[in-house]
Image (cartoon, rainbow, N blue to C red; front, top):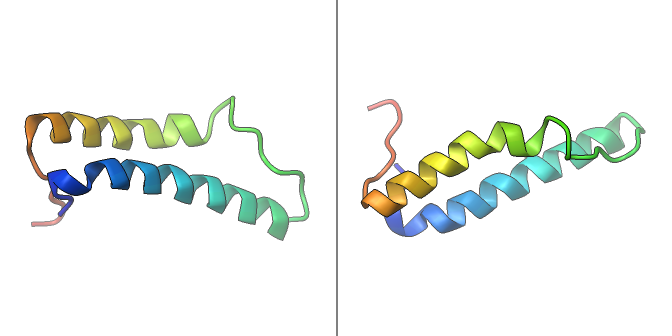
Length: 66
């Protein structure tokens, strides 16, 4: 459950997690850090972030697996 009050923080955390994971993977593979302007972070995280915004605005929680 993501309660409405936590949605702004959840959006920020989702973005941070994706960036850190991509950077860690690049380091593990000894590759250059990824550039995020093509596919990647924005395209993958944007639907989740938009869902958080819509639910926050509507005052509705997000619930999975119930």
